[in-house]
View (cartoon, helix red, strand yellow):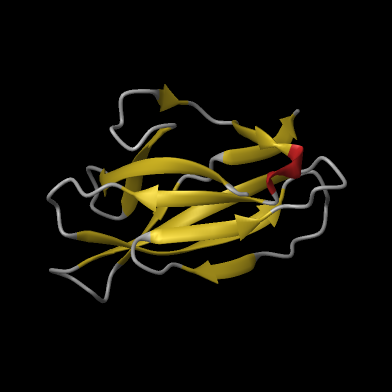
Length: 123
């Protein structure tokens, strides 16, 4: 079962990028820092956006392994402000995951997050 992180997002001062804070609980009391660590057998990482009244929606995620020289990003669409990125269970990897958001007031603009790294090295 995928490990879930809860995300609060808002625009940076330039109104071009998303500033994200990650939590291990839906009440957003336990903040976690990158790299986000999950169990190797989790099979994936889920990001659930927590509403904070700014009218933002989670659109999807772009993931790319950071421990290989090849660039092979994968786009995963979100549904209901939730996105799950698959992770292998047989090998340890590090993924850079960029979350993409939009605003209901400006639906043509995408806000990209800095890419938190996710490592599947917990047992």
